[in-house]
Image (tube, rainbow, N blue to C red; front, top):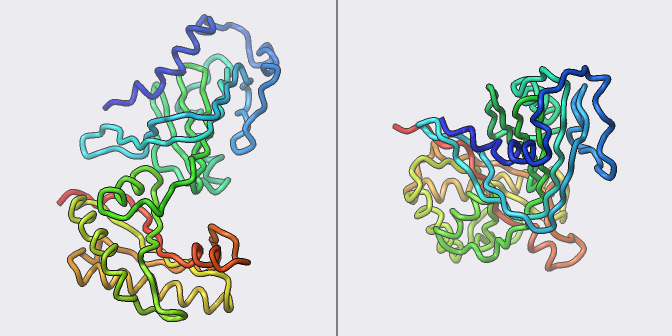
Length: 288
């Protein structure tokens, strides 16, 4: 399995900083945190560790592990955005497996999803919450934590099967602003069929993919009414896709109501952005 390259950057930093020499002191003799480095508020330094180095980038590109394929090889997705990296030194004898397991527990408690984890003689973990990503790489008694705020996607540009698939692979979700409903109703307008047919083509191009169809509303009306309407609209899209060639087992419907606005609900333009259907990429189906 191809896991070792996940810690190449970490090992390079160790050698460059001259920190790969064996340590004989215990945790009490670890040096203070590096001046000017601020700890992560999402995953503060683990017990018996110190901040050794830090780095910020206003523009960064990363290939982030998000799963493994059927051969056990790592599947990565590209992420672009602003990043912040912290390198930690821990007590001699701290094992990568322990670092990854503690990081997983802490991030899950903070509401993060963990799409990828590997823990052995080396370790790596990927976590995310919406468009905010955290990557932890561990080797020897050191680990790095990288926080990445992904650049907001330009969903309006996703109008065909290829661009929809690219958005799903890159961001994990994509809005379908070409899907329109009659006001206050779950009935699809006829013009919606164009972009929905592109979704069918995308699903045919990726036969193991599964997607969740999420319905979103603006804040007009009651919370309960918006939740019901959003679910009925998501279900209508799922039914259209299933009728037009996508196996129902590959589709899931979810109503979000007005809970996740992406724009200002005080303007008509903002409310129009918030009334949307989104596709969310789910774990792939097992190969048949």
